[in-house]
Length: 215
Image 1 (cartoon, helix red, strand yellow):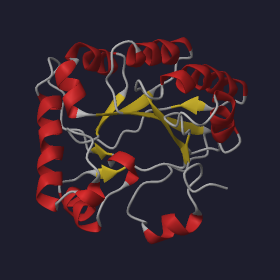
Image 2: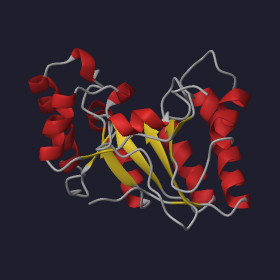
Image 3: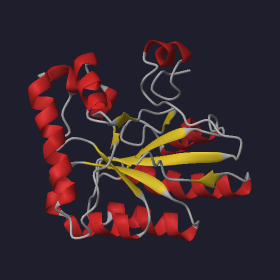
């Protein structure tokens, strides 16, 4: 089984301070969306979630919030959680500690400047899932919870068919799973096929889609 699809057990053991899953006995799963907000794509996602009375968590890029504040507002107004995904979608492994932290702070400031005056989000997801131990340690000292995943759809990969993308998700879902999608232009084609079918599957199997909330 691919590491990118369902995270191997030993990786979780090596990095126990990251949140890979949220165990529960209530069949709750946690849909997450990275890289937005993006016109049309994020709005389509919000509409699909609303159809199924599902809540989710959106890990937003600060630059996209700045460009599309009205869509960011819709995410909040509809009761979803938001998380920090850096301002410029930085690769942690290729970025200095100082630059990485400053870029994260810049994203947080943009979130705080929203019309709804959102409080500081304690949720952080490293772009590409790549973060240095020094960066993670500093962010934890800033009270961030580093949210990784149990399942990644691979919707962003143009070489993966929509059917394979759906299979990546459905065959691995269990209570507590954190599932990664992307409300981005790159992921749009696969996402538009996979998300409705995933929501229908979860509903049929009695799963509840909840937002992540450590605030």
